[in-house]
Image (cartoon, rainbow, N blue to C red; front, top):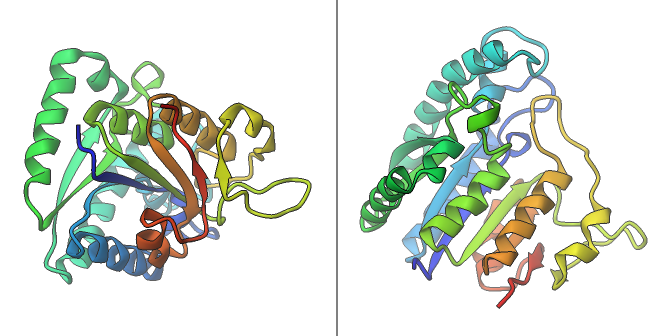
Length: 254
């Protein structure tokens, strides 16, 4: 049980520019600084990063997310390399090394392979200056091997390794109440807010709020504290962990 471990997930909408899907360097700089601050304060973190397919789309000269699997896998192959090169550079500024881990749903379904994942991550987490960065292996993750999106990957990974909390970073401050148009600060019953979701998402993204709430439901039922927060305000991360920042906090089942 990694009782003090936080899994931070950033979606494509947080990491790339809406207009062309290229990596948003300024957003990544702020995110890397915020995660580095958490690690320097002694918090253990895993970072689940989307953005590989989105950044590959622009590199291959496409105007939108490809609909065919082969092109999407090719975009992921190009984009993942660009993504990790960027993270290596950014976190290096804070004297933090990064480790890349690519997963498919099949890796977690097989107990032996799931054990390998747990052992590897546990060993990496013993190193205070190494940040494991996880993404779905989109180059081989066809429907049967796919998590669906990185929201679900994050919460299933949290369940596997016994993380305390998951923070899903998106382009809004949290879950919005459709009647008041205000952020809902805490949710004790996930089923009562499932109808609040809207499927707004960028053309280079995969998931929307509906997919996030499906992932949240999995997490809270597994006893994992979960937040939806604004990835464009990453400095809030430390306050979210301390219960003081703007986000929607989903209270886990006992």
